[in-house]
Amino acid sequence: MSLFSLIAALLIEQVRPLSDRRLILGPLDRFADFLESHLNAGEYRHGVFAWLTLAVLLAGGSWLVFFLLCQVSPLLGWAWNVLVLYLTMGFRQFSHFVTDIQLALRLGDLPRARELLTSWRGRSAESFSSDEIARVTIEEGLAAAYRHVFAVVFWFVLLPGPMGAVLYRLAAHLADQWGSRSRLAAGSPLAETSPGVDGSVAVEALEFGRFGEFSQQSFAIIDWLPARVTAFAFAIVGNFEDAAYCWRTQAAAWGQGQLGIVLAAGAGALGIRLGQPLMEGGELTDRAELGVGEDADVDSLQSAVGLVWRALVLWLFLLLLLGLASWVG
Image 1 (spheres, rainbow, N blue to C red):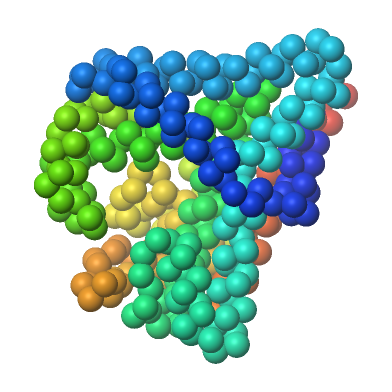
Image 2 (image 1 turned 90 degrees about the horizontal axis):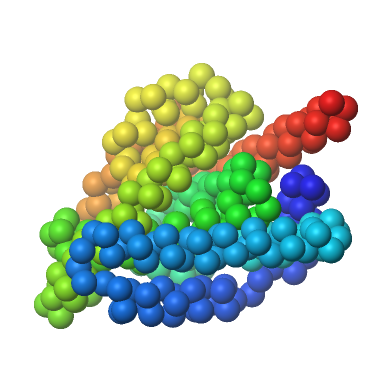
């Protein structure tokens, strides 16, 4: 059932992508804000209770609906899986940016490519050269493919029903929404570098306290295994030796949780260099170098898209083999 659910959800999203994810994230944010406003007294345990409440209600609830529907008809349970995957995966929400940026670069329309990348990242790309746009687009594309496809698929397959897909997306969202505010409260460098962080925001962050720490810690645990499985898949369908080398020697320098592993392995598998310092907003952003070989360019964009698709096909093929083995057994 998992394999056919995944294939159906991917096909539906390719034909009719979800146009506005605020329809999903809006109610989730309001519910999360409601819990935070009623439970947050700045203590770590309050964040644990709020996170577990959301996880039980949403992830556990999605499994309960799946279980009840399966009692009526397995087809209804399958349809519920497809719907939840359609709402949680979001393959097309980033792939069209990659396609449009690649087309703009090939046509020599640098202003359009910069505009698209700025819209996608939410940060200015006005000073980027063509190669820098290609490099950052590949980074964003690999990160989005991991966050919105591979990690979701991993937990969907591992846990019963659609529980895993919901749990991963929920954990990622809460780590971003609650965890970032706790980092500000702890006085991390984020408080100094984030645009728009003024005195009022700093006071709000201090009032937020340790409420978001558990959301960071739980997501780090949930994110640990799928990142490594995804990196291994990139290595298999790309340049294995370079991917393994970059994973081993460069991933830790990137930071950003487990994402450095995925990007380092992806860069090595493609045989290109990612990362490296960037001039953003008139200031030089120091970033670790990832990968080996040539600098990324517009041709590398198509290679990166191919890498993601080959890795996804590999996962689906392995699921097919597991399904056949289970059926034969």
